[in-house]
Image (cartoon, rainbow, N blue to C red; front, side, top):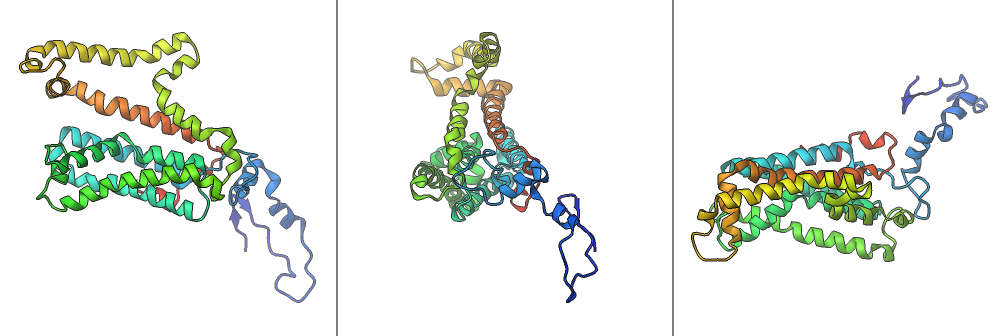
Length: 316
């Protein structure tokens, strides 16, 4: 019976198979078992259990943390819920748990990788940035504000008296110890020998990912002053738009006390100019976050494995 493995035809069984006769290896079988016949197949086998003391090919892909479908589902879930919170806060209860499921599934995947010593420092950092999305940070802020009874856009989920309000707060606030725990683990794990591919840490990809996240707005300057100035145009335009909106709403903003009433500025502009609000809290921060994660995904080995779906990636 013939079959295929990774697209390679399984050679036919010899006539001596499953008999008491001497059955020498055939050239077809030897060629089939030659995993070094192509670099792509060799790398796939290499990444099944990469050595700690070698970084010949860079970081092996971790599809459950940084796979293509993980990224797509994470982006869609985060952006959609952010839009619901912004434009229809009364309906957030229907989409809130999709985001919680997305975050905690990645937390669980990371913990499983830690338990079987297959987590690299790079992918641990990547998981932190993925779960620490602009939306996740906003949910934590809303949950903390709800503890003091303040009005928020997440009242349908966090307000005392709503269905499962205490459970919803707990789910969100538990993200904080998870973030802190993973960060501490990544900081001390190398001394305990529990990280995978520690030889690749010398490449500095984890540090590069964090630095990239901090300098993305000025990254074009690394290519030329011209590209740097072009890259700053959206930020300058947003700043000019905000200044213009504040000037137009100045009578409403400075109606009371305060030399620089930041909260009244925010409310006056966001309540009147919805598009400015959308660009400020969704378009800019999420674009920034997505670009950082895509840069991180680019640092993995790109051998085709990274775009294969696995059970852990189906999270929508």
